[in-house]
Image (cartoon, rainbow, N blue to C red; front, side):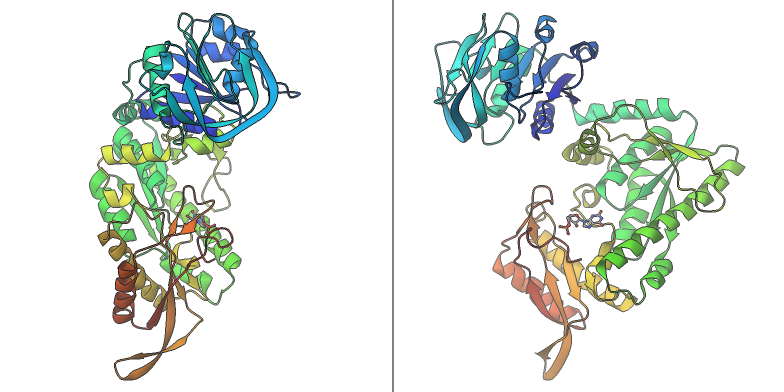
Length: 517
Ligand code: XMP
């Protein structure tokens, strides 16, 4: 394992991902972890990440010199580089010269070390205020820039390395080469970690944790829960029951995807709770977006609990109560919530009759160490179809928040048709991967005049909301080709009764959110 010590900022996750892309397993640990604890994990190599501090700031995270004496190869990046230089007696100073963004660096002398295979002049991503003016004793200076006289260093003998720039970001032209040089030349690791190993490893782990016990897993139709369930199914077979609550707010074909395709691909035992009636009647007459969301959330928990009660009862009668709850928690959630280790115990909702007051489920979280793209790759390995594995994000409240106005069966049917056409055309145009997601929204309370055939129409508008995004926190509207938009518009107005107008949402986020409610 390569340990990435996180000095704050968002860089540690990116570094861990890049290391894994080089087929070496890596994990993130907080900078508050003691040197002793870090070394006790027996890392094959250590990377010190960047961070927002100045080594001179009060309370700035430090790195102890002991870390460099254990014989473990270390790469310091940006702040990690400065903290390392500082700890080893180098000269780190506030020069007042800031470098931020794309910067040119020049290699110095013949020693290339971790810069092997990169050009003499290269463009890298910098973000620093302090600079290393003198390398610690025993180090060669590999590169310099205008604002960083010592921009990269190496001590081949002790296998200690540092770079002032961020090799993990794509703006650093040869960043991945630098990281791989560190991993394979500096630390002499073997690239043998693949998502194939994850499946085997996790199957072992799950079997160990669950033994002969029983588990349940909620399926949302999304990627994470499907892959988690498929992994656990692979490990323990019929000891797992999957629960799918059909709330009737799904898009065309989505319920079948879970009920048919998922089961066919995995052989999982599935409990379907058809709760469409429950949701429609709870939503009757409601138009306020927040109220809709609350109702859907509340009813979902109730429906899931009711299913849980049934399954727990059944299995208890058979002498083996359900003790485990499978969740599709991903690594970024784990890191962001403090990176706690070990299985947490959560108390199941017990406000439904039938469950013992103190029923505790032990969590099974087989995706806890994985990033989203790795989860997709594991899903593909497990034989899940592309429609599930490559699925774009879809909100839990579903079409309920894409009908602006009251939700009813008729409107759902109409929106499902329009959405299916838009999705099919987007897929046919080969743009599924380029577009982050494309909500299709029905303005159910708006009507406009149109003309079709020889007659006047008075129908509803549909809004297309294609967006591009990295993480859904910000987004821009996608510039879809006009002929694609024309095809979608023609087909929807021709094929969907009650819709006589198609409009395009050209708002970025902010100020607009991706969804309309
Ligand atoms: P907004 O509309 O806030 O959406 O820009 C950001 C991303 O989150 C999705 N979304 C949800 N996902 N439950 C979910 O699981 C929700 O209640 C929910 N609301 C919005 C949205 O589709 C987009 O990807």
